[in-house]
Amino acid sequence: MSVSNTLPNSIPFLDLVTPHVELEQELTGVFRKALHTGGFIGGPMVEEFEKAFAAFCKTTCSVAVSSGTDALRFALMACGVKAGDVVVTVPHTFIATTEAISQAGALPEFVDIDERTYNMSPERLQEFLEQCKKDKSGKLISHRSGRPVTAIVPVHLYGQIADMDAILKLAEKYGLAVIEDACQAHGAEYFSRKHNRWMKAGSMGRAAAFSFYPGKNLGACGEAGAATTNDNCVADKMKMLRDHGQAKKYYHDVEGYNGRLDAIQAGLLHAKLTHLAKWNAQRRERAAEYNRLFAAADEAVVSPFEPSWSRAVYHLYVIRADDRDGLMNHLKKVGIGTGIHYPIPLHLQKAYATMAYSQGDFPVAEKAAAEIVSLPMFPQLTAEQQARVVEEILNFSFRFARKHVEAEAASLAAADRTA
Ligand SMILES: Cc1ncc(COP(=O)(O)O)c(C=O)c1O
Image (cartoon, rainbow, N blue to C red; front, side, top):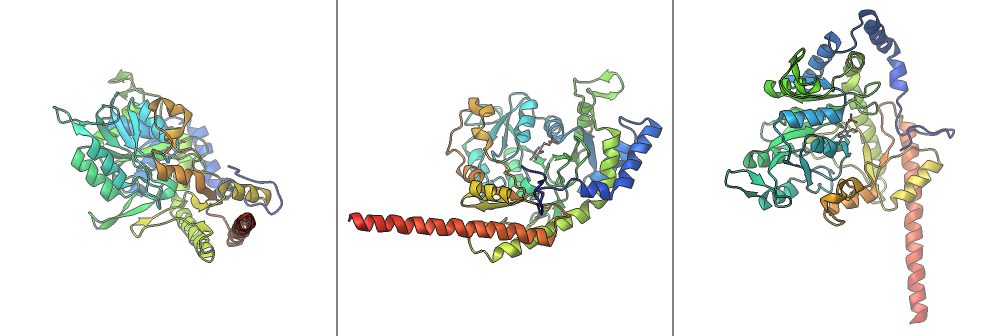
């Protein structure tokens, strides 16, 4: 992924400078406050940010931690996931999703994604759960590993919430905890047919994890994350886990971790949080503009699909193209930054070779990984820049299609001559 490009007239994949320079006064004020109070760990800046982020997510609690990976690990552990359990998730995500599951002591097992939303397919999840058996004590046992299945982690990829009504219904039927990986979905909304209202990412599962990695819709100036929940007991456990297993200083109920969020990062995030709704709205406008420009291009590219029950926040704007690698090369040459999120599905990663999955196990995720490309997407992206991105893509796609037709015509002519 190229974040910025030095060619004249280049369009970066992501602009991390402009929003920070725009807020320079506010952000440096946070540093000054920390320097003058010496409050670097915990304290009011962390607590105030937690309150504000919980309110933003429409949850009762948020627990600020040092990364999204830690947020997911603590959320899983606080929801009762134990060593030896199976947690069901998707192969089309960043490896942090499964790292957190493994770090909680559990084994990730996969179900395929939906072809259009790239999120967990409720149908594939149902198939997986139907193949599991209950043991004598009523535990659900994975048909794949023979271990107890205790939780599901849907990932709200690219800023769009997975079909939570269907996933939560299955979780309830099989007695499983749902922990949302909302690391890319700050502020995304989902219309719950069950509750007949729009709900925010992070407010629907037993707990949820957010990442504030700098490039996220809400990004820190370093590493940071938060877990949200409506369950006070889960929140208290997560608070202990992030702080060496203590609720009271030096009284350790369990062994925990050093997973706290710095006060400076909390202050910076709090300042930026007040702009998040506006930035998300700008991302939605940018996505609508890309959609409008691509609509004229017939089937040259497949643009993102947003179901009627979704209000995505476009952490990434991902299209599919026939010759993805050729297209990326072309865009690089003309100074346009792109990325692939993600090129190898997790079940085919070397890190998981011992899980004995093979090519073809999750065909939808595999096909997506081969065809997707993420285009420049950030709130400050201009309409002119978008028009140029789309023009370059359509020029390339048109040339690709023409080459394809010419090659087919040549091979037909050759076949005619030899007949
Ligand atoms: C889907 C997903 N899950 C988890 C994470 C982990 O977050 P962090 O990098 O803050 O640990 C990320 C961050 O990139 C992510 O995109």
